[in-house]
Amino acid sequence: MAEYKEIGIKGKYLIYKNKPLVRDKNMLCYGSMDDEYVLFMMILDNKKLECGSLEDKPEVPNRILVQIMSTDEKKPAHERLAKQFEKNGLYEAMDIGLIWLNKMNKNK
Image (cartoon, rainbow, N blue to C red):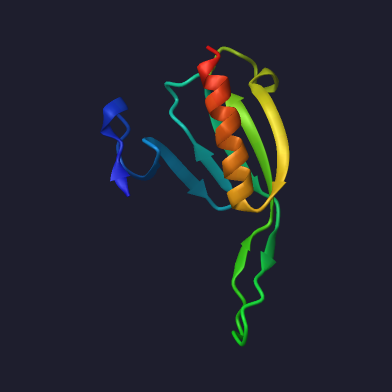
């Protein structure tokens, strides 16, 4: 956890590649509002891991809805969605999502 004081955000957030990553229940948001686009991910369902003899099997995110959203508040909500896709697993969703996010933010 780190404070993100560079752009005036108070509080402690997980910082990944110099940008805040915030989770609230099944929603994750990654990116800076100073960029043109941010990454939103919604966990649609979870799956239980098969871990040997553990009685309480841990759950991990399974299907993830990934959205690249514009940070332009002047646009109506339905026009802010730039790209949307679904992936299996949080790693794959974050990996592909970051590729698209970086590509779209460089095309300013």
